[in-house]
Length: 502
Ligand SMILES: Nc1ncnc2c1ncn2[C@@H]1O[C@H](COP(=O)(O)OP(=O)(O)OP(=O)(O)O)[C@@H](O)[C@H]1O
Image (tube, rainbow, N blue to C red; front, side, top):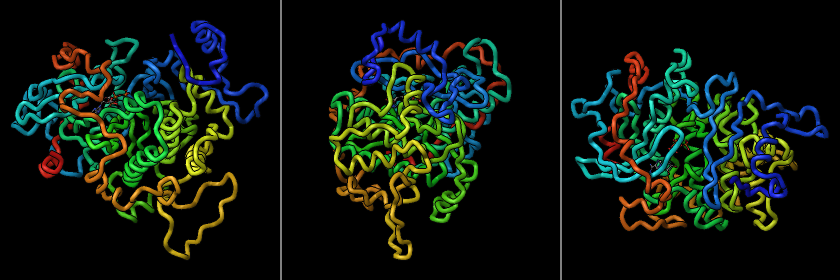
């Protein structure tokens, strides 16, 4: 039985089966005949999922869609992540040389036998995330597992390998999460300590964030008050601004990917869909790098990727897009925290895309929100990205009197300083940006944690799952030559990094 929270669909009298049948038979033009011709968009090339979105209780879990514009040659569930280099500029080890690492390698790398499973924390499209205990140190980690077979074989026929070009592209993208996370250190971004692989899987050993998903807390509380939303928006903004300054577009912001740490601070996880722009890869973080990034707009991306409910319209349209798509997603997430659902929902992804396209002025913002919050949401949720607030550019109000602000005309992009917005009046930005608030003050929601190993803030749907299968070798006949694809995946954070964070 599929439900939708969406008012527009509530009036439909069709039974579920009729409704989904009709949706599948509908032509995929987005507007009806009364709409302007230039706004009509054909979605056939997107190979959109029309299967129902899984519904769990009051709040449905949103799955990432991974779709490509040119062409849709691999199944939509195939992980599509992209990065052009697997190098590690921060000095972690990378020595596996392509052999199948089922053994510990001279004490440098870790292997599966080093970790004892405690319980399942979550499940994504490509495997489970398991809470594990390091047998040597008793420290807890979140172990994310990715099945190699998902990357190497097509979904229609598990025995047929994809062609070489396809596979190497997908493998390259599989490195993205490992590579991007190994280069980052930010209080609101999850830390990566080790990666390794064996015959069947790739493993990422991440910092365990015990407060659970924001999704879990939203499910419990329904909605959050404006001050709480402003606080989390500020923490997410710090993380996004940091990522953008490194040339990384996050692309999958949603409550399922926002975790709360033990002090109630927000930590972004799941960088599987993130993308690092080519031009930014070797550029260190500096003001000049930032301005080069702004002027070049090098992150013109094309992959249709993310979770439709939180995706910017330009991403869904398959036209080139930039880091601004993350600010639209932040608007969707804030809307969700305030209202209890993202701005556009529907029984399947196609319905959601149609609604976003139909909503010419952007989503309707409820009248009961404060004027400040309405102003913020409307600036972030501008459908036309050229009119959307360029938060990276207008992060602070300029102090230089020569940089006088032009008066903003109605409908135009906002040009005032983001951090000075009224909704952030209680945020101490200098302390937040330095990571001092994250260390010294509790966040607005303090997760209940009696014992870290109990994972009390994670859905029992996952914590009650069996993990036996996830820690056994899987008997999959992966050709030996395929091992080369994963050469360089194993990684260990530098000693100083490990010391700083444990
Ligand atoms: N570092 C962590 N600490 C605690 N829990 C985590 C951590 N990383 C992930 N999880 C849990 O596991 C879930 C799935 O992780 P993640 O989103 O990285 O997997 P995925 O396969 O990429 O998922 P999806 O297919 O939805 O994109 C998260 O939503 C979260 O509940």
